[in-house]
Length: 137
Image 1 (cartoon, rainbow, N blue to C red):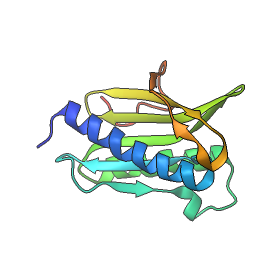
Image 2 (image 1 turned 135 degrees about the vertical axis):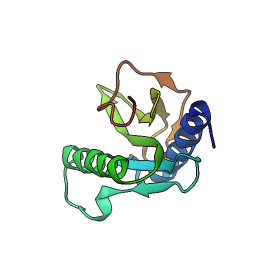
Image 3 (image 1 turned 90 degrees about the vertical axis):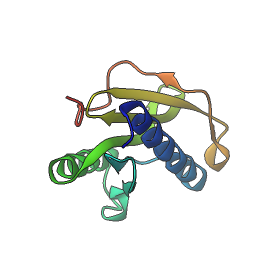
C-alpha cells in the first residue's frame, strides 16, 4: 500500500509525463484524467477528445470531471489527476490537479518555447483548485 504522499507523487508524475507527450505532439494539452488504485498501481487515463473530437474545451473538461466522478464511485481509487493547458493573457502552462482521499495539490507548469517545441518550466503552486475537490474528503 502506498501512503498519501506517494500516491500524490505518482499520479502527478504520470499526468505530467502524459501532458508532456501531448504537448510535444499537439502544442497544447486538452483536458484529460488519470486514476490510480489505492496501491498506486493500474494507472488509467481518459482522453475525452477521442470520443468527442469536435467538443469545446469546456465540454472536454466537463466530460473528464464526469468520468473521474464515475470512477471514484465505482472503483478502488487511491488518486486522481486532471490535466489541461491553462492560459492567462500571454502566459500558458500545463495545469495538473492531483487528489487523494486526504489531500489535494494544484500545480501549473509554465510553457517555454512555441508550438511543438514547447517544454515545461518549474511548477508553481496555484491558488485553490481547477474543479472540486472530487476525491479529497
